[in-house]
Image 1: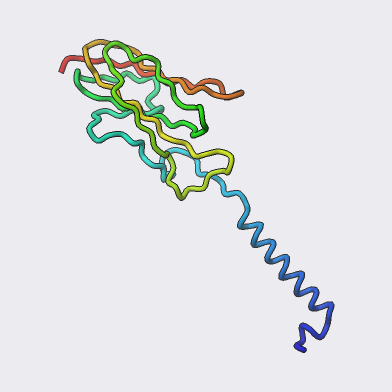
Image 2: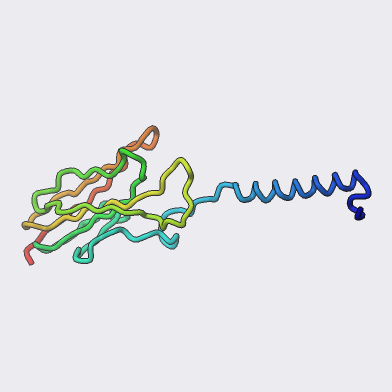
Length: 162
């Protein structure tokens, strides 16, 4: 017998130390990984906006006046939770604009960890075309649950002759 086996108490101590080391490793591996905040510099994926779209705005542009020539396209990219039944709801577009497409895609790369009960957010992209001169308000709502309430995003759009 080797020195560790000669003393049963010492062998038990070594076994206990190994067990605690293993449990500490498992606890470290199972610890929740904090999610990076969304925003600039987090490795967030860009919104899935078609290349042919001329002007792009996001929720950060809320309240701005957007000028477009007739015939131009506008993409409104909004980040939403991926939970079933939630998403941005557009109000009917003002007369100078027409909604011509919707696109969606992930906001986080697949290798970014997400909490088990909360799916990662997604991009919702609404593409509009300036059809005639005029001014109107483009509005979107994200229904909330509980204390979150409803989030609203509005843009004033001015369509002018080219």
